[in-house]
Image (cartoon, helix red, strand yellow):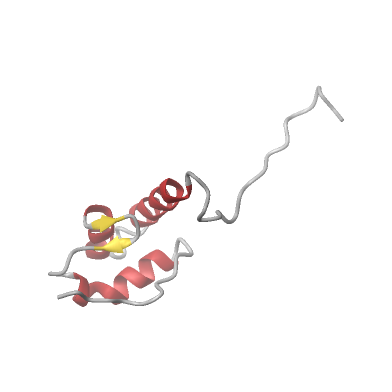
Length: 88
């Protein structure tokens, strides 16, 4: 063990969704993904930033017309849509 050297850095690539902070981590990651893609997909990024509860999109007015852009944008953050369910 080298106690005088630089500390080791470890990165978590996956979060177990039973962990206490998993919702917060997912929310922050999704928000950051939206920020990164807002120039390519401005409407999709706005929906993700302003009309989402955890990982559910709640903007029923615009979501149907922007589903493909939302999927493309969140794919950049390695998020995947399991499917779309419309409740209206």
